[in-house]
Image (cartoon, rainbow, N blue to C red; front, top):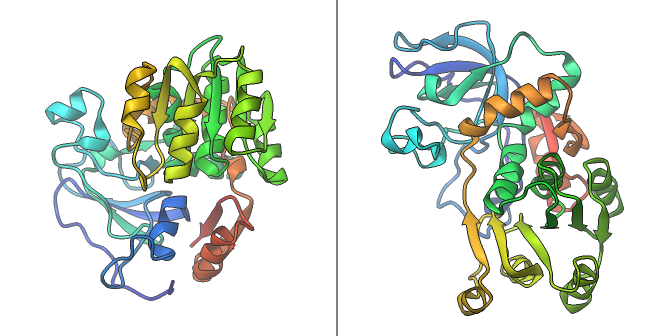
Length: 326
């Protein structure tokens, strides 16, 4: 990871906005190329989570203006295509990613369909929680929604990173009465409990599954949130679901699923990249009114110039998630 000077972005399309970032961060999915698990062929800018203040907008932008504090998702979406109109904004027919958001200035295509302005300038303590909405909180929420979490549900969350912890918070907010966080790390366990976990299971494999079943009438959970993406985590998630249960799959996939087991046990799979823009209005309101504080997943803050240290801290699991200040 290198911190370098780049040319300032400029408006290229009338639907663009330029944002001066107030806070950005490192995502667990950024660690895949960092670890050379899926290495890019050449150096490239990185990052996809951001909050900031609009510097300028193109002539076609109508919903945000210079000076607005805005939150946007990790993908841009036009908000008008047939897919977006169904709410699946992560799969916009004209959408895509960004040219690196771990930066002082970023260009946001499709500003009207991507960005939402907050009701005013946020208090400083709200900024981490608003930043969490750019990806991890919406992704955890998507896992819970995809798994059908509702009042009275029993839920297992596989993964104790920022997305998994956000999944715990989402499950609690959606009314689950049993929320089992699978975590071996004390600091992450504490955040999970603050977010509404009713039980912590530190074991993995057969021992962990036995404990899960003890807590779920001997059959497994109604809903399982898979928030890692490895083959091991996916197998654990499928095994932890009861017959007829649902699995919300949001970990970036690096392993196959046991399709025969899913079929014969009537277990369902939904998920994928979170349609952040579809969830933002509700979750911004919840953060703004201090109903939720997903920003607690940030346990280390560094200047953007020390971005390499941020990656090292997350790679070595010395930090859950690192917030960077430009």
